[in-house]
Length: 468
Image 1 (cartoon, rainbow, N blue to C red):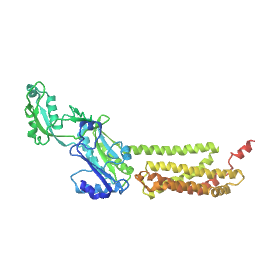
Image 2 (cartoon, rainbow, N blue to C red; image 1 turned 90 degrees about the vertical axis):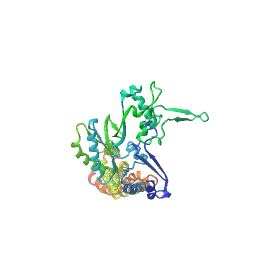
Image 3 (tube, one colour; image 1 turned 135 degrees about the vertical axis):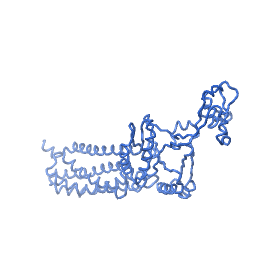
Image 4 (tube, rainbow, N blue to C red; image 1 turned 30 degrees about the vertical axis):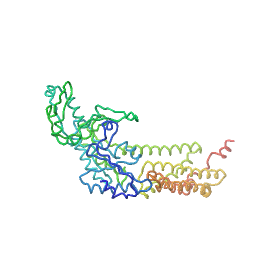
């Protein structure tokens, strides 16, 4: 597999390949961390690219998905988020979409069958990749049943048998940790006792494991105190909210997350009637974060527009002028949507933040024009000439403000620099919104002003003269 990876990534762009095969070294690591490897049959490959001197990582991932599944059809592959942003948004999960089938323990077999069916359906969704069930339920195992009556006759307990077998096969480091401190450097080293693996190379050799303990001074062989059978077991068991579950992970490629999530919801709706009583399906991961973020940003955008409107009502002492000023916002919103469509950029949290920024600048430019038109109306000019004069006079400051923002956002919109594609939607949304917002400010807002503002504004010098 390393050779296949090296055939895809040029040697000049590759620095290291690190393999983590099997479970962590100690049970303490498993208890204190959540590893994606669930058994000795599982492995994790970390590929490090040379900083600033490599091609797009997404292209390499796309090629490796195709090549590894073709060259190793007997294996299952999935790619975890390598960047810290993706890991945080996934809340530690190995994929942005996590479909959880939960229910009582009695519904376990039925829930697992449904999870497998969901896996096959999700794999057919365009853009959904790396679809797999996290839990492995058919790992072979040796089950040793202790004959307690026979063990008691020999002066042994079941705990003695379990401890001796555990020490022999996986060392004493977990149940009886012991350390030796080097007096020369003060470093402590763990001391573990176990049978060499090359000695226990068959079931017959394992059954000859000596068992001691209790008050006995002599040892008994394992085969004298019990019977060994073959069985299957689950490699990993997950619980959430004190209920067992099965995870169906899915990644996204060449399509936006919201579109894939919508298709996933359609598939899951067809499985809800098939769930056994007491079981249910829940979608976690980056999908849940994305939906809550979009709802919060959309509500925040609406409230921001309303707050700006009411603040301007207080400042202008008018309900009409703030409404005319906000006529530049439809152009800003249209420019944002058009720019994202032209650049094939999905709607995301950065693009929503860029929308809020462009709306703020568009409102400020529109305020310049309407405020100057009001000053001209107070001097006795009619509505249409005042709107035209305000457009001509405020042309330079409006263009300077918009161009400064557009030029400043251009490097971000092009995605330059390491990880620049993360913030590119923000720059593109700002540029698209300001372009059409500027056009609306200079052409559409004066027209609306000349139509709606027939009477002169009642504030400023005119308001002072009327009140004496």
